[in-house]
Length: 425
Ligand SMILES: *Cc1c(COP(=O)(O)O)cnc(C)c1O
Image 1: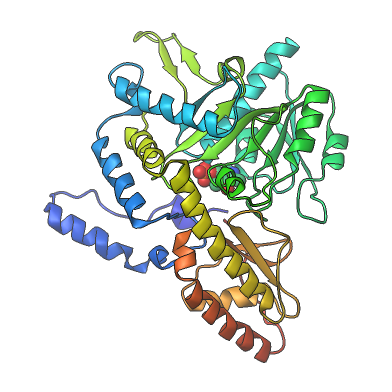
Image 2: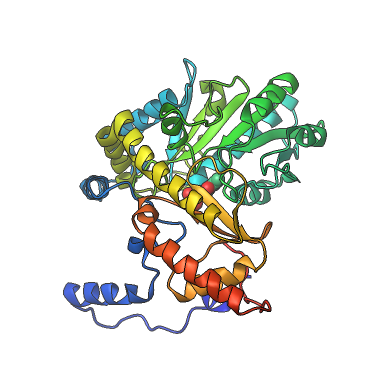
């Protein structure tokens, strides 16, 4: 449940008189003081960092296109359209898309997922000749809730299939869950909870055999996995090189290291992509066409994503991935060496969760929170979860030092007390 104060805000009168810009800015800066110090790696997610130069460029490019509106990309701002098309084309090339593939930018993973599910439903209905068909989605239980949101908006059902002992999608169980109304299969690269890439090549085989749309949710890993592979890491295939992959969502505002909002939603063919845009000609102002769920959207997100990709290039992303993944290797090794801790599964990229054998992981999280490290938690198993970028690698020594102390303290406390914590995003 949403906290009540979120629904019903505390009373605040509309200001009768304005205040100076300095005064207003000073108040904004002041208000941040109670927030989680993400700059020091204290937020387990939400903010990503490659390096300072990338941050600065992203900010500059965003501000350069601060006023422009990507809703006007087809009319007033051809430059925005060009930038968006280039971002999409570069993404398609990165993900080994075949000739004639297409795609769009959106404001984030949730929107990319919403759009892909909508495109899939539209095509499924057209192929069935049933404009009211209520299909189902077959996916591993680790599926991001953005799909539940999409399903709830579009009156679809989701069949969540338990993952295997390795925390990856159980392909045989997923296949058994398919029926005549299944319109979509989904795998994640990687899943948010465990940071492991599902066996997309097996899902692709089933998608081809059964002629079902396969979406790969590479929101979190899309712009990291290709570079990890290029560095020789054992990252499983997940992209359009696999023939059953119909669409991919990949967020630039995560490991693309671009400012928010920026995501890509990509399709194997123009025919599939054509199911995404919305068009209406019902009102007096004539034809209205958008490629996204939202209308007005910041062109800054488009320009900054373009600028970030241009600045880093394949080589730069590999350099960042090398630094980040080497840091995470050290983190994982340190966790594994701590008495009583274990790492959940075999993380493929930059999401790592750890649990504890004898004590409650939530008790550890609670004491870490008291030291300023905002926890992210898993329910199954009870574990502490972090989606790591250079912000976390740079502050890793401090984190691990605090963790050592906390583990001792939790062990010394003996009988487990209720942490009062609940896993939530
Ligand atoms: C972050 C994420 C999403 C949703 O992305 P938003 O940008 O937060 O809307 C979807 N799927 C996965 C696996 C994610 O990690």
